[in-house]
Image (cartoon, rainbow, N blue to C red; front, side, top):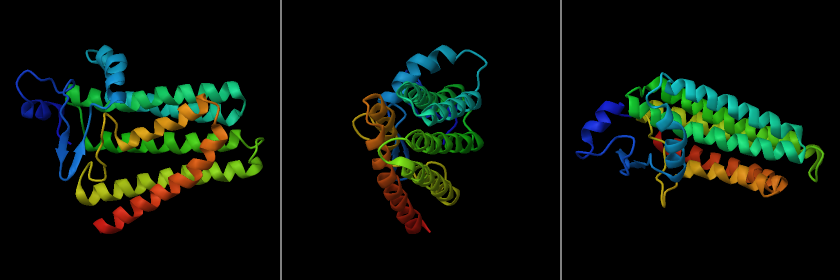
Length: 227
């Protein structure tokens, strides 16, 4: 990934690196930093912090803390804490988009920061499903909810491992997929907290226990192709 100051040099005159509507081309992958979630995070988090001493890695740390807090709330299992966990996880998602934007704006991008961001993403997403499964152990799926949550969370962790391995061999962002209509594939995780807010946690758990391993198998195929 280009440092923020280098990114600004390749943009048209008068276009700021933070505000750009342009996707960034890396190899065969189109990387968008202007999805709808990025735009919300930019207005609510990045712009107020741009001239402060807050660092991108500090935002990533807060994102991870929020992700763990969301998982803990979901693990309680009551409707109130499910709703709270969903809300906290949406905040965690916004922080995830904000840390990269802040890094690009201030020229503080780094391979280490990118790796830390990936790890925080994986842990937050994996713990979300693990916490959801624990919290639903008294529901329709009974104690099966716990291994279902672990299965979905484990698949998310496996995807991260494969992403990191692909990037080790082909460079940063090599494992990213192109976006469309203002959304990137990783924005699909937003479906999870929305499903909980709409009162469908058990359906979400079952779908995640099927869909996350299937997506992990897709990434395994990608990884095999790139070897």
